[in-house]
Image (cartoon, rainbow, N blue to C red):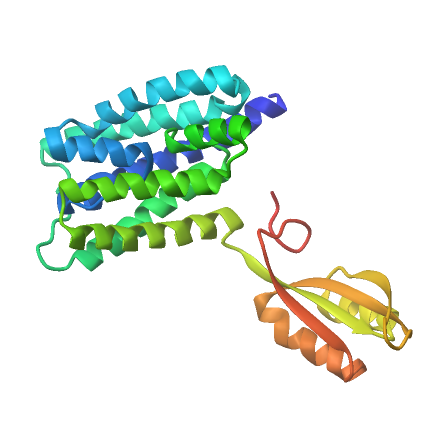
Length: 288
């Protein structure tokens, strides 16, 4: 089995899982409660509210010209996974439409607790998109527009996507109440946080930068007592001119107190900087 084949076998199922979760969130929480979403999916939802068009058909039709433009201006190398993600999303949207039509899935509808619908919509949409983005794909739409504009106009992708989402969600005021637009913003915010969580990695750790005059001794202690790798950097105080060493070490959250105790037992005057790190790979942590 080649490396590319092995990568595809690991990547494509996760992208499919992500689009399945995203499609479920749209059909189970967004549509039955007349909430909204950004991007091309948001336009498809508006068409559903206005003309009752199936979401699967609208999403596919809207993405065809965008992929044609992306193929021309960006090249096929940047669109492979995104094309797969879009087709996968279309498939699961159509599948859920069938399952809902025959009564196998009953969407969550509420008449008074829209905050619950918005929260769960944000979690499911964010989880689905987070998995898709983490493995290098998209669901098409606004991402392609943003890439083209960024490449040929030099505009910020983030600003373009924000502008498009704001315009689409704002247009929904023609079909849904402003209260539901506000609930949509709650769902979008929750979704963005979940996407960040998935993108950065569920496993978070702490990085210690320790400024001390006895770095080698401290490094040996950390290695012996905690079985963690340590890196030493030479440093010199700008004001005092004193030579010191920076001990750099990454530890799991539950090891923070142990490391602080170890540092203070050797050098109570050590200067310590602790920062968050995400998606830690390597010996003693996750293996890619």
